[in-house]
Image (tube, rainbow, N blue to C red; front, side, top):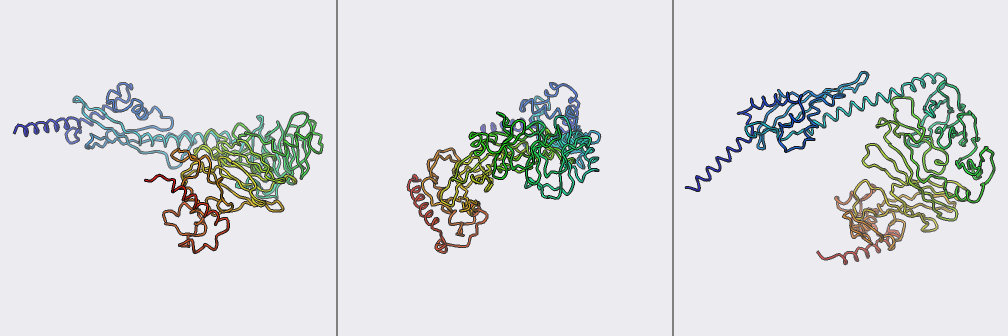
Length: 594
């Protein structure tokens, strides 16, 4: 009986303690309303007065960040109106929850309109309890409230900043519109050395942005200044970027050939008869040029001479030493053009010089580089090259690999890396093929047979692969024909090496790192089995539904057994299947027993 009485007393005390620690809606709603009114009034006082109403369960910073918004300390773009009188009070097991509705009012400066989204609604949650007979705030849940505020504030701020950038460009737009009375189109404008220039066109101009070159030919282009005076006559196919390599000098193209024009003297300084002009600027050698298969050079007084000035420069040119090891296209580094239209504001355009285009490194025209402090219409922060690799493949074929990185604003990764591979005919001094490989780095380019070139590279992955190794190399192949024409060889496999090469130990060994950071000198069992399956899947062997996603999109399951297509296997595939079977058996035997 004594034990039973003790238990009853403990239970009663516990219930009493619970009752004192929870603000009950039905018993004390009036007191809560009084507290909320007092709390609202305290928002006009000091931080210390406000914080006295909170327990120490939450950091000072997190509380004051929400309080500052309630106090309209950040009212430039958004003002906040909290309706404490309309708060919903709810007693739950963890305490008393008070949800305060909030109205967010957008403050648009004159002339700025954000369309239909002008105001927003949100809420703020306070968790209350009793401490020593007084109501206190244990927790202020303001994540949703702060997120709603920040979203509206950022939207308005973006609109305001956008209008400021448009206002800066408005004089250019008006001037371009006026100049267009004398031309069919005013396609670009640029500011160089504090002077404004306009690219003007007679005829039908269309730029194929995806190809980085004009899509039409029935036009001529020129350059005029702010007053409309002719700087470069309207007789060219393309006017380049102002002052890209030399002050006041711009590349011009006519009849598919390149020359130089000085915008200060308004004179053509190098005739538009060359395929490529390479700036040099030392030892009385201003430029090296290429015309068809012939090289030549200009001295400082722009007198032309055939051939190379010396053997050293011949090697320098033919090994592409003129390509900058590091180069960045970014706002402030070059003179960007823009289209004189608000729909294109902030999207910078560069017309690249012939030595970057003829070598296959870049398209003639690149666009979409941001010219504003924030992203408007240009979503590329910058494009940069990170060095080039030159390699002799055969006596007649050389390869140039250049790493190009794009930094996209608000992208999922900081860098998007690719390698531009260009194969050249050494004797004809001509480009054979240009291809882009999505890779962090290229390890080698080699001729593996009389008519086959192999590219080994470390790919760029934005997804988790189906094998253990993080740094497993990939391979691409090109056919090398008798006339030295080159073509990329398509593959319907994840691992193209199994299709074109008889595998040996060099393709399955190396310095590998697994996803769990183990170091391997040989491919894993998982990867060896993937290589094996990849071959059979390319012929159409059916795999379970849950495994099919790992194969290329061209995967077409149509056979139940290998025997059904055994007679179709190539000699290379028969070798590789047998080779991989041995590897898999060896790895299974080496695997510790479970």
